[in-house]
Length: 316
Image (cartoon, rainbow, N blue to C red; front, side):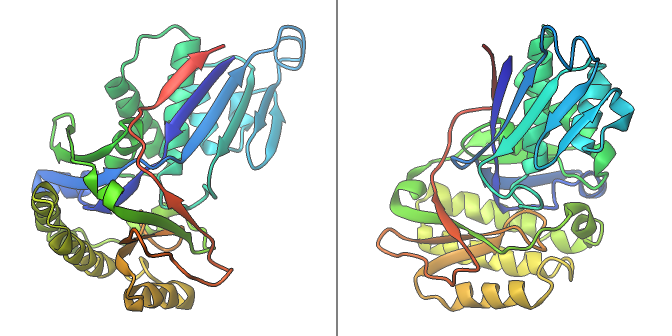
């Protein structure tokens, strides 16, 4: 049995500048993100004399259950793409996560694919390093969502708080950032109770309106290095205002607008933004150490910590 565990990712600023279309046009992109102590998991197991080996059946367990005799019949697109690429014979695949993963804005799809690519490469004795796994995972996920950005596989697989820079025809460059901010402030994820497909949001983005986010990333990096958290949070809020204007779908509907307004007017909230492509999933909110988020029961929240470990797979 192979067990894999991969962090999710929370992007602070720069999302959409990591898209292939943006980088083709402007030759670069950059994001600041971190991995929280929240994960996706996968297990891979081939039985000795049962459904896999004897009946030649794939058993797939996630939010649904599938039993089928060939890869082409698999309904879960993530599992299907990875098993097809590696030409994996029948086995049992189980997926799980620490959060509502569908449309979370936390790159759960990328995290799942990373787990599967890492686990299957371990199962098949392939010597893939973390960069290899990220590149392949991006290619496979792009078959499902052609508007997918580069930041998600690298943001999930490489743990910690980091600046990720992208250039055309080059591997992403990762700079690990000071982590004192996580000791001095509280970070919360607030569930909107809205699920969406990121592809719908991403294909509506006007990439020319994303360009100012590059300067916002540079400013955030500067203030973080200087431990100037007052200006860091001001810039983070300003970048969220820019992000809301790159597509009308990012914060669409009364629920999101009401929650956004409630967080903006909460004096205890120093900065907030909707995670990922937008349209639903989770809000990130940052407060002082003595502050607690108070919201109605329709929006459950969790306090998160920084995770510094990378994606890993283990045979047991």
